[in-house]
Length: 77
Image 1: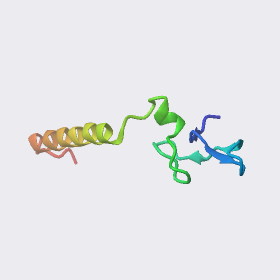
Image 2: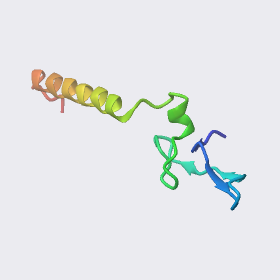
Image 3: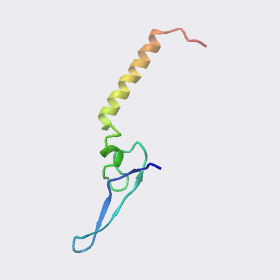
Image 4: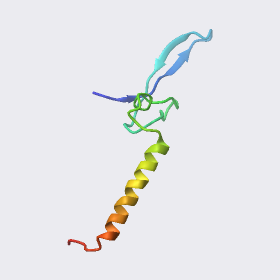
């Protein structure tokens, strides 16, 4: 099973030595972890586009759908 984990939240001891790293599960469309703020694996591996690029692409496709609907005023039902 494939999960969208964060890069990890490191835990250090009082001497500054790395003890453990905690990985958190995130939603499949999350670019950053909701718990620690680290990038997610899907975003790091470029399976998810940056939010600005994703929003720009979605806004243009919604606009195209809206203009197509306005051109075809005949509603089939």
